[in-house]
Amino acid sequence: MRLSGRTVLITGGATGIGLGLAEAFVKGGSTVIICGRRAQRLEEAKAKLPALHTRVCDVADADQRRDLIRWVTSEFPDFDVLVNNAGIQREVDLWAEGDWEARRQEITINLDAPIHLSTLAIPHLLQRPQAAIINVSSGLGFTPMARMPIYCATKAALHSFTMSLRRQLRGTSVEVIEVIPPMVDTELDQGARERRGQTYRGVSVEEFIAGILPGLERGDAEVAYGTAERGRQASRAEIDEIFERMNAGPVR
Image: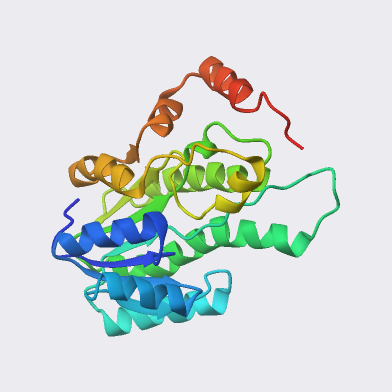
């Protein structure tokens, strides 16, 4: 897909992978809109990349999702790329009763939101000569980390949804691409890493974005990097072996 001359909406675009993608599209000459829950983070992103357009939006809220797509299609009629990137990751002890609302929020942001936003955007995107939906899943959707069961399950479901979406939009002007990160050094699970005393923080955002840009430009249906690429191509036996190795230590 072309990175230049596009009009791109990126959810969760103020930090991490979302901001890295925003920077790549801006450098490519595209118009980029980012949204997020925190106005301060959006302001910080715009200070770094003044060309950005920003919108406060909590994608956990269905009404705000509807308002977001209405606003984007009205203010940016050339809108032709949706990047479903927003996500949260939590360690969850399934033995404990826990706070169901917090657990449901993880499902809502990671899965409900990209499905809903995609269906809201499709009627507009079908009118564009070239368009794309990019869903950011995770290598953990292929080989899960047991201490983050909800996150991993939502990313596996997003992978499945993306395959079905791609098939339903086959033959239209809308490409459907899945971006599959490995562990990337972002604030997504920074607190959990610190609690575990984990020293490895993952690849840098810059390395990850540089690693996936060629696949995006080629229009690959699935674009992974590093360990996520190995997991994406693994056989069932290899997946089982990777799963055992990843989850060898204490889970709870």
